[in-house]
Image 1 (cartoon, rainbow, N blue to C red):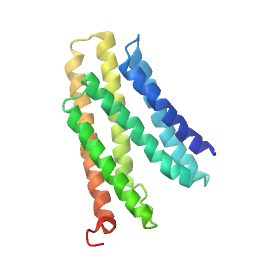
Image 2 (cartoon, rainbow, N blue to C red):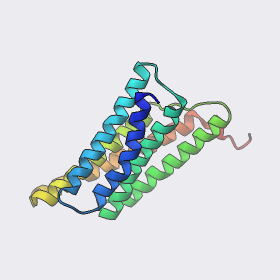
Image 3 (cartoon, rainbow, N blue to C red):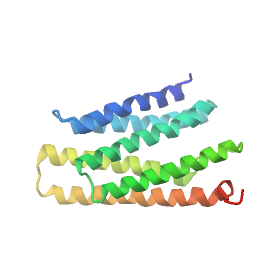
Image 4 (cartoon, rainbow, N blue to C red):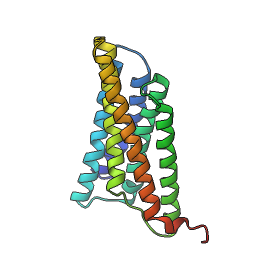
Length: 190
């Protein structure tokens, strides 16, 4: 197994530990969750660049990398529902899950016909926006819980909500673009 794939596997392994740190209260658990999530997000950036730069792209990596991304971000959004982070977080999570199921299904149908639907700039923007929104949300929650600065709470909540909803909008846009670009694979007449 090459290094980019090992980094992807590491991201998969980190995901349940991240969720555990997010949901189980212990001193500075939000900081631990933030560090784990940020580290896992960085592996996503590194493994993809390394695989392309050093010609280490594999079918295993093409399959596992997007799965690891979806597991990591979905874990965060589900944790946010339980913690009540973000206005409309249940709807944001629903939007994310519908898009991911839709695009994964589209990719499966496409693969069955011998075609690969590669990630495009909108899918990458979606992933980056989700990861940034999650980092901002966890960081904001940590600041609120740890430092109890009343004046900062409304600002942190506004920034959290804006970043979460921007990620939701980019999630919808990227999903629509993938469907439009690949509508031939889901033609009801075929």
